[in-house]
Amino acid sequence: MGDATVALVERALEGDRRSIAKVISLVERGGERARVAIQMLHPRTGNAWSIGITGAPGSGKSTLTDQLVGKLRAGGTEVGVLAVDPSSPFSGGAILGDRVRMQSHTSDPGVFIRSMATHGHLGGLSLATPQAMRVLDAVGKAWIVIETVGVGQVEVEIAGHADTTVVVVNPGWGDSVQAAKAGLLEIADVFVVNKADRPGVAETQSDLAGMLELSSRRTWQPPIVRTVATTGEGVDELFEAIVAHRAHLEATGDADARRRARLREELRGLVAAEMLDRASTVSSGPRFETIVDEVARRVRDPYSAAEELLLP
Ligand SMILES: Nc1nc2c(ncn2[C@@H]2O[C@H](COP(=O)(O)OP(=O)(O)O)[C@@H](O)[C@H]2O)c(=O)[nH]1
Ligand SMILES: [Mg+2]
Image (cartoon, rainbow, N blue to C red; front, side, top):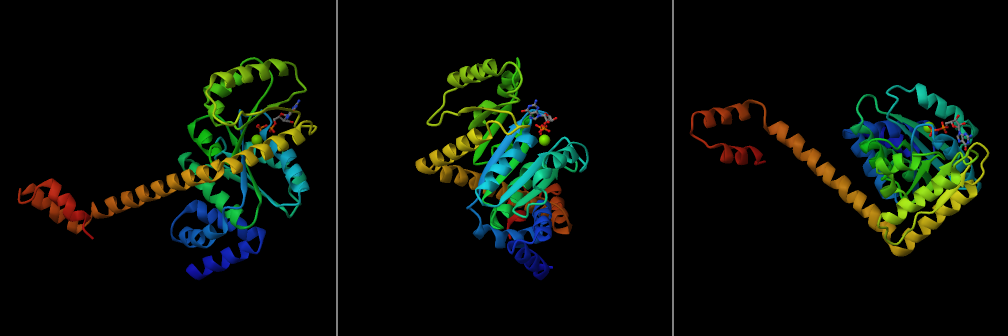
């Protein structure tokens, strides 16, 4: 099993698309094979720049992602796309629509697109997404775009895994207020007012600017970019805003600090999961029952019994 995993990861690292897809599934599932894969992948990571695109359903994230991918590809580097859709437990519905909207790149070997559905539990996505990002990074995607719906805590958390987070709103009363309520103001590095072909753009832009002024920002002021994703208008400006944010983070050292913070969180989570695993292992079986007996017969107190159980 280990050898098969090693061979699969090697093929993925050579750029074989089917193998990349399989390795992503494998690291999503976790377990022993995921460990082997991540051991091989991790040393090769740290080169990709990830862009999170988040906002309400229908705000134009997929259309914008498609345009942005075109722009990134024009630079000659490879791009990975993760479409995270917690609303779609099966790979139909919205994801099928996304496929259609990202069709312009499906035949481009330099673009790898992956839809990630929840298969029932939402929490799994926030664990699986960084692992999928790790695979794409290791296989040489210079840019990784993650599209995720910006409603709910988990989705906002996923968006926060990106180096640059782009929050998409539409013109119209209340859209920016909704974004603020969802906690998107805090995580936004760049704002996009998409569907700028519709009325109310200036109002929405000044709403956002006003709210940004109120929230205490540190060194980076999130720019507000107007786009029409369906025509590509404003996509150059969006790209420039992302590049400027990247340059800012790299110049201040914040890019490394953010990545380190994410790794710290991941490590904490892994340690906790490992401990939980150990806890359930030592808390069942004959040895455990024997110690329960001793506690019940008052020959042992529960505290020293717990300590004893945790001894290797
Ligand atoms: N008028 C207009 N429609 C847009 C624009 N961007 C996207 N749309 C349309 O809005 C709908 C939802 O877009 P989609 O990219 O699927 O949104 P998502 O749910 O955020 O991924 C689609 O019918 C798009 O064609 C835009 O800038 N202007
Ligand atoms: Mg979409």
